[in-house]
Amino acid sequence: MKIFEEIESEVRSYARSFPRMFNRAKDEFIYDDEGNEYIDFLAGAGSLNYGHNNDLFKGKLVEYIQNDGITQGLDLHTRAKGEFLESFNENILKPRDLDYIVMFTGPTGTNAVEAALKTARKYTGRENVISFTNGWHGQTLGSLAVTGNGHHRGGAGISLGGATRMPYDGYLGDDVDTTNYLDKVLSDSSSGVDKPAAVIVETVQGEGGINACSLTWLKSLSEVCKKHEVLLIIDDIQAGCGRTGTFFSFEEAGIYPDIVTVSKSLSGYGLPFAIVLMKPEIDQWKPGEHNGTFRGNNHAFITAKAALDNYWKDDKFAKEVQAKGDYIAQRVDKIVELYGEGNFNSHGRGMFRGINCVSGELAGAITHHAFQKGLIIETSGTEDHVVKFLCPLTIKQENLEKGIDILEQSIKEICAKAEEIPEEKDYFEGDYSVSDEVEKMHN
Image (cartoon, rainbow, N blue to C red; front, top):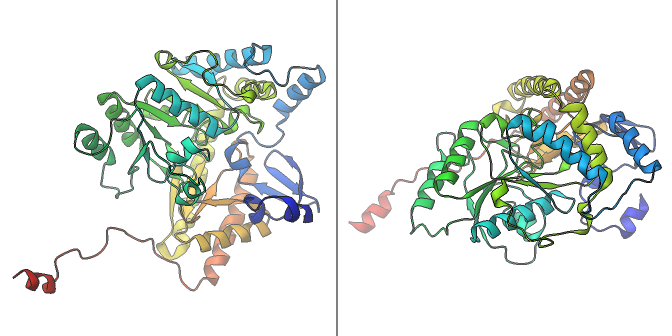
């Protein structure tokens, strides 16, 4: 462990929450040097939806490497890329009646977001992009500009422009439809908001606190975008690839986004891989106008195809994910009912769930305690106050139950030690009526 302290940057993060030397992982388990076994409810921050070293993919990857298959292909036509595209088209796009062009970007989620933003601006000739409170879209400058988190935006060291923030669903209370506000702002030439090239949104805000917008709100957002001739970008990097119960998280809303970003679990194996999907008329790029050395990760093409062929040829896997999601929701709702003195609440959709513990200190104590009991689970939200469920979608039911049992016991024990459970602050609470003193001043 000493070497990490000596020469690795202070920017490291997850390693501080889980200070062990890990050396092996299989399915939903991770093992450390001392042989301790941990149930993984982090899953590579959502990049391991099919678990660690999935046997359905591993053999195909090893065989490909042993046969000297191409590793780095730039954007050359390779058999691995062609077979991935065929599988993606047949298993994902055609069954959903989605007519998209596939753009291979740099290998990470933020590369896909940058490419999506550039695509929208190039197509429309407009600069401004609407994003949402608590949204998270990546760590490079363009992605940070549309990200809400102040801590990470502050790391840019430069002004971040080209974006206008709007309130996400529920941000102003459950009874306020914030798409009406967006519609009003875009309809009013004196609102001060320049007509945007696009609106970018997560259907479930992962790093923002597992805030899931309603399907009604998402449909309304799509209609507002159409009304004002603004492109709709769905950032499906964390919520996609089955996390909410369908391959794309927007499917249940019945919408057809103009642009979609996909990454994280797309490779199926935790390998870097990202794409942008766009309607054909939006693909206005000239050859080489947006490129990147590592667009052609052929190892990722191999495992991504295996994931699609094994899990998405029919709806069997999706139904399994939905059933597990229902079980998680049931357990989480019971936990918030039993603990937290009525101040906890749950968020999310499918197997993308969170428990809002109100306090980051409390949530951190819970996840630390759970780790000591053999569960790896992290927090999210502006104050790291939400305990985030991101277990592999392929987790066996018995291990899913065991992991939630560990978490529940940890919550029970930490809450029992807490002097008080804080209440969630209502920013619209208070008496805003004119005081007697002020009235006297004006009389």
